[in-house]
Image (tube, rainbow, N blue to C red):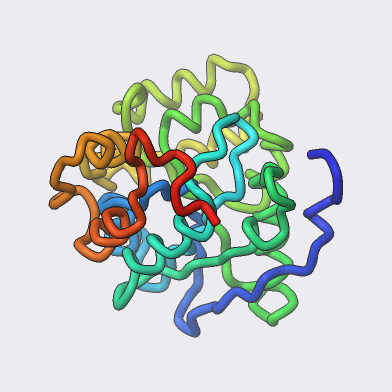
Length: 244
């Protein structure tokens, strides 16, 4: 990252539920947040137990993506609408600490989350990192991936191109990137999440549908659909519309 070292910026407040024994960190652009995103807290609770809480972390800009995407204030507003009245926390630390146009890194986020827990006397609360199987296959290219695994055990959602847990684990082992202990973490994380079903829609599908003027029912919540319409988001002719 160029410019100011955002990893040293003040850490944004993170509300820790009293019942939580595990925080499941789930980062993404949420551009826009769709029904698969909002279904995750219930699915994670079913897989890990009621003492697991999902923390949504909207990203400033993925270091793996060049496109700026929708402005952060829109993405955050839609995420708040999508989660309103339901389970799931939002932690804005990546947005708050990253300079405009800068990239945010998962290893910094996980370290900062661990610091918040330890400083609050919550050292007993564990961290898990939730992401898709496609990202698991590229995880060795992330910044300091071994450090991430030491701090937050992976929780992997099976999805194309990796829809079979055994094949995913075989691919990870063949890569030669992971120690025996790390492969055990992958094995346990993939097995735990194997039952987490994903809805078929992705954010790219929602953006395409919105650009075509299609009905977004069944893809996003009514409140998010209304927000997209009111602000003219994702229209082919509105790349820079309402970006202030």
